[in-house]
Image (cartoon, rainbow, N blue to C red):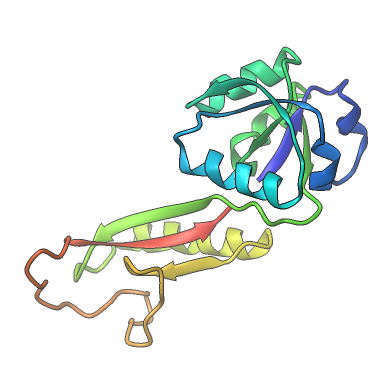
Length: 174
């Protein structure tokens, strides 16, 4: 997650943003019922930082448009603002402590081997997460890896137990 603000905002002049620097700012955020909003609120509370939530949306693109018109700052996943930063429409700054990470889930069929393209896509996501300081959060619905995965990261085929969902999820931080 990164801080996104209008290029003329006072925080745009900092290289990294400590959470405490958000004290009192106008913030454009996610709707209260979204998990990512609750996580952001917990981090702000843990640092005893109060912000003025001026707008709430369930859509990242809408949040970015509000920040572009200088309605406030936002905390957004870094990949969602890469193009906007390049166009100088938004200032994007990393958070100093790196404690806000939005997981990315990959859902796939259990017991079915991934094709070459899908395997490469998973490798790309996990290598990008490791390169940017994130790390794969785990494999499987419980979020933990298994030593009996094959070299492609697939679990051996097994008959699902009654009530099991026929998918597993791999989480990657961003």
